[in-house]
Length: 585
Image (tube, rainbow, N blue to C red):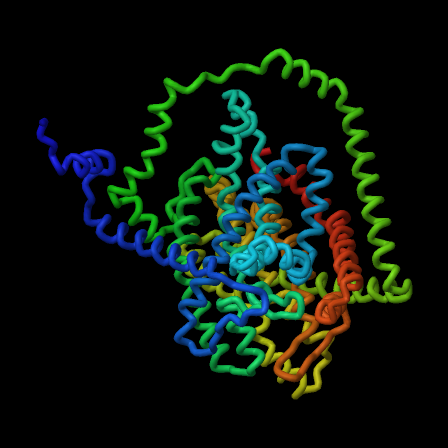
């Protein structure tokens, strides 16, 4: 019998992974510890549960680390789904004109639908899908958080694909890159810096709506899932200011941790994809990224997929050109392009008309025409607030965003603070707002308005920072050498460079402000309720009353307002950016 060395598997593993170095002594325990915590928390989310069963929830701050873990897991799952949605939905809209005509208006509508609307529609389905398990309410909460993240990321990626410089597209065509390789070698890297910043903003947006997503009402039962959002809801219900302070501190710690462990490494990594001819001296840094790059085991693991692909290349079948039937089908589609476009357009008209007739019958059976007119007036009041607030936020945050974006080290310092402010739920300010309005007899319609822009103004800041940080260094150097004045520099370089990013931020801030009106126009603190006149207050009140026809009416009217603004304002600004302002065009 041949002698078998017991250390053979160890030697084989060391040959593949390499001998661990001193950096691995920190990196391996860190990664394994995170994986253990994530797996343990995920297992808790699948515990047995039956509708009507009370979930234990306490205001004791000792439970906050566990609640923070559960909330973080929900947000991580929603972020993964948002990335998948972004890479598929936005790419299809950017690549196919027929799909674009349908998908972009649908995205506008989805952006304007309040989270309460998504919850009321989906929660029963998720609970029935996972009967006897907590996965049902968890899936409903994850989907609600997904709706606060995905639309912003999809808009950002879609417009980045539309703004790829022409010289890079021509180079990809000359090198005969396949659509798959063009996507991963050109389009994703070009869009990555903006996408990373928008992913940070979307994560913060999930925090902003975390209270609504973790406190679920279904069939007369309220489900308070263990999490920071439900903890905040319970603290507001009990008017416990100390518990609210603990929640704020917990949020700050969690945001700081995932900024250090996730987003700061992503920002530093995305710097390598900046589109410029000259290298910059000042780049973003991340101790986590440095640690993983210097750890021998993780460096070998990063190269492993490339080695596997290279070893499998000789045995994989070679790619062949399209077969004769596919060529004939492609030629037929190109020949009948005009007919297919007409059929697609008429099909959309028939579909929208049928849905409109069905909706009109459903609503008018319970709502009078006079009330429908009043709802449109409520929408006008909310629209006025949104327009004024977005304009004021633009005046404030565009100069700040440019100043931060041009200084990578300053961006690193501002990044966690901006994430924390963007994530700050409006509910936590309800005590101060209610007490201030009541004590000083302030106008509710004016002083509740800032709550609408509290979370969404950061879309403008984050996108402007992303746009300013990607201004090519060679163009900055040219502007400096030409001796341009400050105003000329802003007019000729900065404003054209950040304009596409600003429009993306303005659009998402605009839609987010409409969404936030449902939370901001009706404020509760204990037994005191303040209500502003507007469409958000109407939807919130009808949702609390369980009046589904009026809830549907409010959501559709809000969607119509958002569609009108997007069609006549934001789309024209995007078209102007594509035609006149694209760098490298």
